[in-house]
Image (cartoon, rainbow, N blue to C red; front, side):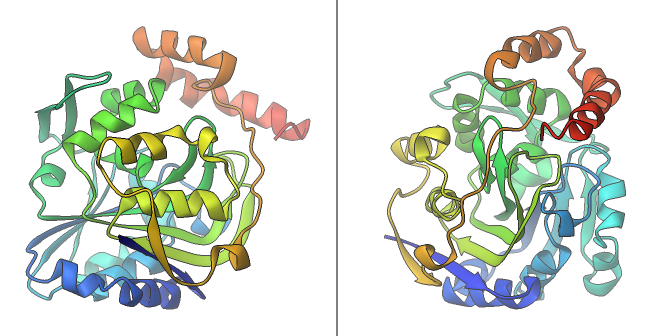
Length: 310
């Protein structure tokens, strides 16, 4: 049975504790090409609950073999700006790691999907495919389509921009195609500050938690339970278990779910969810989705925030 650790404390200390509880060093021993994928979806500081705290990643790096080549990668909106805003650029000098904005990456691998549900091929960063140890560091936050962000959906940031947009439009089935291409070898969820209601607009919830597991499915299920999200609202977790990408049941170590659980509110604005999803898919198909989110969505967001819609 899989082990999921729930550790409480500051970002660095809780991460170290979670890694110790899951015997992380045993799994990463001897690995040479390591890729760490945090969740840095938009240029917002981690204190707002939207992005991965750099001290979580710092603690992971310090637990890696000295002989390893380490790359911290992300491909999202203004990735370079988000790296700098959250202090990720300092990791280069501190540890000699690579810091990679995948939006600037020109080496992509088109990988055939086994038993596809949506996509016959997935376009994903070659360095991710060729890594011998991939760590997904997701966030404890609500997602308007997937239910929660967690560690599995976080993997979307390893794909090309056009592929990410299409995957978003067909969640949850599209996430199964992505997992069939690359399952994380280890996963963590930064819950130091979580976010309710929306995945991109801060509604911070201070939790002081870090979750870790070798099993991304069991990890995301545990995260959903902590946020009090019914698995029917996050169907990708059950689907991933049924398709053999991880275990549904797990041995929990560290904190107890019932002691740290808190109900996260749901219901943000997203053109890719609910009745708005038809419009979102149309924008994706005609190649206008990115333009809309850069130019029109910020206006809608400001109006709705003033009205306190979300």
